[in-house]
Length: 564
Image (tube, rainbow, N blue to C red):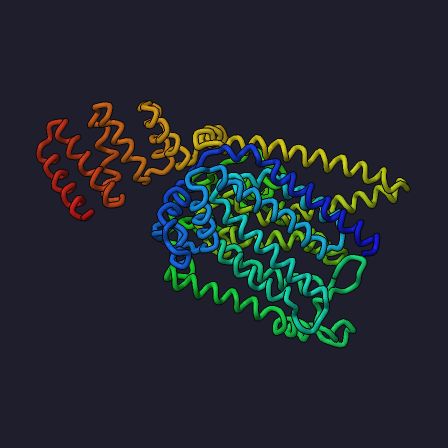
């Protein structure tokens, strides 16, 4: 082995150790955290229920197990949870350790992908280190169910890495790398729906590399043989790319859609069944939906720039629907959108690094933005896991350009890079601190709720969660305050009225319970409707209204029969 090759490998290994160490080290303290929220549903309920089934049978389940919530099909993620549960059972630490390993793998593979796309280890190292410690990733890594994000991101990055490596060879026929890339792409799509973005990313890379290639190395091998001489028209090149490289990816995507249709009975979530609490955009006007989409973009960009404070829940009405373009949130979103467009146009006319970063961010963000497809949530920090790599590339491109420029101006390469390196170390150190702090918040549901209440008092779900813990502590006054606030935020939220009615009955105040119970009865699942009707029977009997009490006793019996 030539000495230069040996040194090159040592440099790559050094980068890998640093990146993986930072990725795991920033989250080691979260291994003692408890299961929280959806972890209880997916791991403690569903994985436990399915642990004795064959993996083939597990593949036939939807994500939630009963299709009562979002129409999701993520068999790779579900199988990973079932296998983890078979080995470690109810212990949260090992389940979360798997997430840490997946996060480290994503960071290291991002380094490899960056090297083959840009041909610059400095840029690859900076982007991957920032990606490893960025605080916006805490929800995806620290929560066990964030594994869907990690698996989809890992599959997408690895598939594109293999795809680009194959394209760089410049051969007429794809190599084994391309075949493996198709398989890994399928795994990404079956880990989470956003994994389908790998098709768009591969197509964009081919078009991008035709213009930019690897800086300093000429054109990319992604261009079909015989087209680099300029004798072929653009349309001819694109047609050959479609036939040689894109068709197979589209076929894989089509197969995944067919499987999804067979399991779920539908391809996309029905807008009408999306709960207003989860995603108010689904129930907004056309103007509100359009304006709010820009607001959400600005919110995500803001958290990428400065990820503090963070919150585990942004459901109704933590992020109110935007109804006017003079809303400050919309103005900020437009500033971000304008900066993205201007940066992309400028980069297309100069170097392609900024364009690649922006396009990656936009393409990976599109499927979670509630603009292309409505999802079951309006906003979540975990959704930025893969798109944030575009932001990290953008920072790295700017850092490398600044380092080279300062070195040229000062005539001393080391001095210029010492300045840039110091700034980058400080930036990463800040992110490590923020990540560690946020990881501690994820130690349990109480700490998350307390943190969220400091950030917003306008989320129905956060108020309901806080009320549930106050009830657990037998603090009726506090639980009524939280449930009352939830009902105040969203008057037609039936569960809040039901729980308020229960609390009034506990305080022996039936007059206060009746209005809330009347608002919710008939708008709840069958078992809860029976409870509401039975409470109304008790309340009317307590205030001396036998006719009304008898009526609601009969309604309670009707609801009880519906349960059988």
